[in-house]
Image 1 (cartoon, helix red, strand yellow):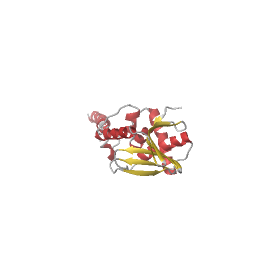
Image 2: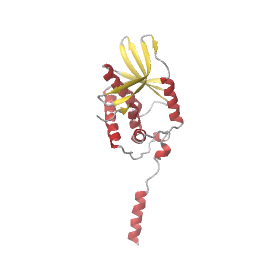
Image 3: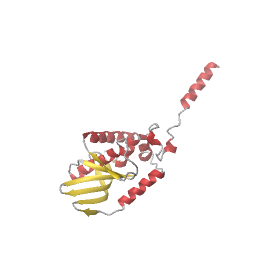
Image 4: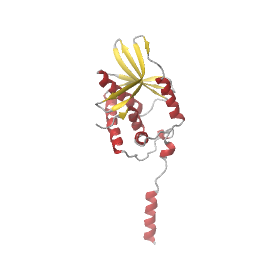
Length: 204
């Protein structure tokens, strides 16, 4: 069986396959203001002990894995309700809700791990965003589950190939901590340069 895929790699892949490759193939990590703030938020969340409130017990930094899907990682927060019994994974994010499904795929994959480990069905998960300071519910319907399974397969292909994908500039590039390293706006002029040499020789 291939090596287990970190849950975070799925989020990275949906956001940008090249970012995913930098982190999980090249083993590079670069902090900027945004990533450092996100790291601080996760450390704060994981540093809080488990607690019981009414019929809900919460545990933080819960290790999960899936043999079926080849996944491994940690939950920021797991809510366990007793009446009725229900498990809700909660992922904390520094910024705002995103246009893409990158965060929803990550928390859905967490639910897939929990379903396998606890032999339960999980109908929804949650994302808590720092900037609006509110929770966004994620209904784990067939659409997001299929997107997550497709992402798992695509991420495994990328990691097995071990190659850095071509840079493609998107609006999300600017706040990325790899922006300077990746330099997605730089145009590759090597092909044009070589073509120019042959054109010059033919003219001569």
